[in-house]
Image (cartoon, rainbow, N blue to C red; front, side, top):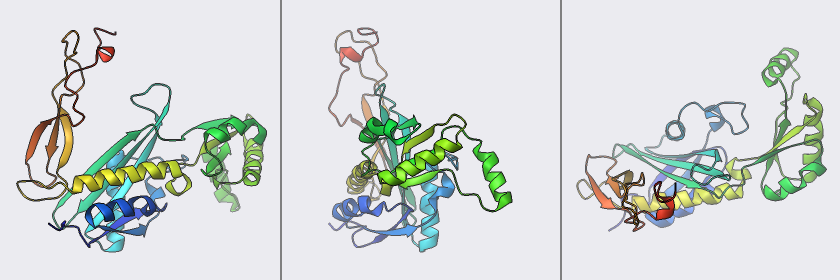
Amino acid sequence: MQHPYFGKTISLTTKHKKASALALPLLAGVGLRVREIEVDTDIFGTFSGEIERKGTPLETALKKARLGMRKGSSELGLATEGSFGAHPYIPFIAGCEETIVLIDDVNGFHLSETIISAKTNFSFCEVRKLEDAESFLRQAKFPSHGLIVKPNQLGIKFIHRLGRLLGNFQSSTIKGIQDRCSLKLAIDKCAALSNDGLARVETDMRAYMNPTRLRVIRELGVKLARRLRSSCTECGCPGFGQTTVSGFLNCSECGCTSESPSHEIHSCARCEYSKTVPRSDGVTSLDPMYCQRCNP
């Protein structure tokens, strides 16, 4: 049967060209065409810290999608939101969390998917000059991945206020750097403005500046397309899939109960139908190396 979304168009709210990652998975998976709606999504928060994100990634993605739907006069909306920091499950490495939402006002539902991944170059360093950053640049995959530079210690709010009064202030945060000449100039400028003489060099996590992040977003698009191919057996709504987990695995060695779930709960985004199924990875017991009793 032809998918309900085949031949339809969905509005993707983005400022940073995310259609390059999402268009193909959704078109190939369910025949859904993606149309970019350019919106200043920085109003919901910036990775460089000028604007703090308020709300969870899911709440923010829903707000983004709604804004694009209004601007594009669309009944189908799509948006993503990313977070970066320490990996929640793997110690001592960076991680990323990408969330995507799809809103369908025709059928009256929305659904979301999330990926937590170690595939990220998220990092920063503090340097006095360009030569001090060489090892960081290799780790950050510069220049194919953009960078952000700003003073390491600076009263940003005070300077912004002063700048507005003077009418000639230029932001001390320099984004989208992709060549060594611009990077050197930015480091020299920001180090001179910093109280400690250091410039903070960060990976630019905006999607169009970060091919590694775009690949994770593409994986998320594939995950969403696969979910949309599954329909609710009760109401026929697309997007029937895992929404939470239940139960607990027992250790295969000592039999003690762990915190790892034993089952998945799959639900419909529109009606109340759900069912409990075994874990999709086939795991039925806990490896003793993860058991708090066998390996405290």
